[in-house]
Image 1 (tube, helix red, strand yellow):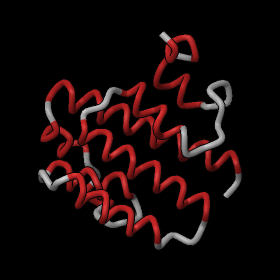
Image 2 (cartoon, helix red, strand yellow):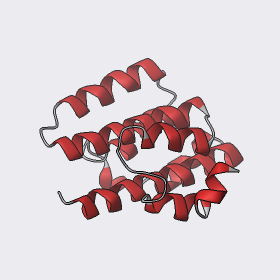
Image 3 (cartoon, rainbow, N blue to C red):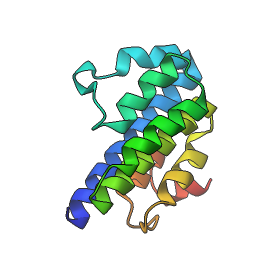
Image 4 (cartoon, rainbow, N blue to C red):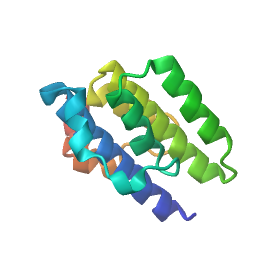
Length: 132
């Protein structure tokens, strides 16, 4: 996986998380059910898979265990990092943390600076929007 591909996939995860955070805060966790792609009902997309557990009210510890086991099976380091970020996004959404904190958690698994991160522009409108 190239750096550009990693950045694109990472930005997509951050955008999905932002949408889920906004939706769940505004309408509740059950509202996320309508946003799930039922074609992704497999463990390849840890985010979609994990959100199904969140919507069903599964305790965080069980979700963490299941998703951690899926992540541990991944051989590719970049994909493993992306799946770990997805797992943390799911757990953060379930916990109800705000997007700025969730982004900081997700970004901590990467070496992506705020200046380089395409998600900062899309989600926060740039660095100034993030640090406000």
